[in-house]
Image (cartoon, rainbow, N blue to C red; front, side, top):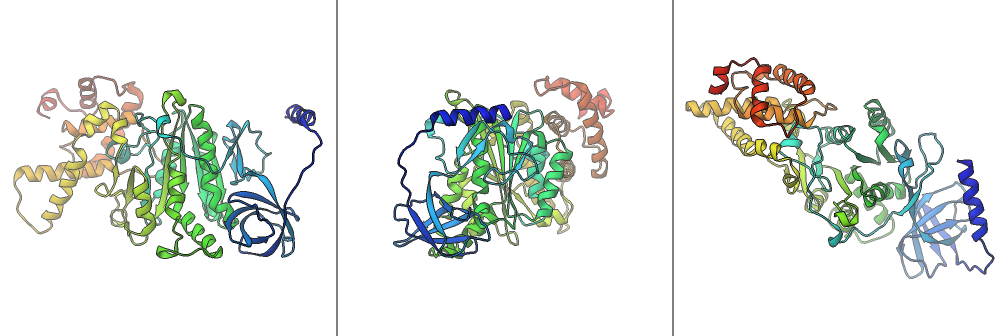
Length: 493
């Protein structure tokens, strides 16, 4: 490291030459709430960096005829009215590279884990245009989350933007953490962005990722609730730039924004402090373009551009399940689908509490493995029909035998879809339970017996060596043997 540092210093000295340098110097008019107003910088442009005399730093965020409004990135107690400020002359960026794996940093790239500053090989601007249309490719590879519901009924592809939406406390972050943990040995680099979270939540997230061995291939970008509002605003852009660097080098990446509701509120706070005109729900008019510009950078590149991908999982909070509120509807229209978590399902013990009727993945089906896609087939539609039938039976109506059989199979499927948090499952197991269910191998069970049988199937799948490419008849025979079903019963099933 020292050799590298000395080599860079020597190279810098060789390239250094004396020349006349001119700087504009302004003066701080007022400071407060993470905002500084500066006069005397007539050539300042949006997103220019400002250096203050006391060592503080800021980013130009608003321009008026006489003043420059800046959000503070670093603030010292010495920053007061009258301090001088000058333009730095370069855009804001973050150091990027493999050295960030396993590290916890702030949006400026400063380490928060007590370690040394990461020796990164590259640099990326925080604000960057999304890849052009000609550089993109269709989503064609699956991103396995380890969730029974997501991997089968609401699939996600690499390069997709899938929104996780629901009330607080329903497991949105747990779903995202499951997905990150499931990327072990999948060749996917992960970036987890924590925006405006309490320190206890940050510590829990770090501990979980470390306990499950996921920190080795993950970078955490943290702007906790006590951080400056400017840093909280820039956190998702820093995480996106880090993932973008790996994507441009042909790697597959996953970035989680936890969460964009807090980000939107923070942006509203900054905009009101900067005296921008408020719009709907007091949010500034450009909140849609801010989130669209961020999420449009997630994509799948074609082979001519390296073939890398960036999958985005933005998390958004609803109030009282109101999915039609301003920010949720904005993000639903930007993303390629949403996973909606319902409080009633959560209270009824269905975990993860995913409302399959209100959740959708518009492009993930193209990336599904043919074997999974064939088995999933009409499963979602049949499950939704079962929910309607079950509602009908609450009125005490007498049903035909075929209807009773459909309701029994629906209850079996509902029991199958239940899953504990932080327990992602391999895709081979997902295929196994779908084959068993579709062939009626579980029809003789009661819902209470399903968890034990699934555990048995999972143990056998882990040691069987069966893969998605294995012939379906072989899968079926193995499942029947594992479940102890006789040959005659197999054919009947």
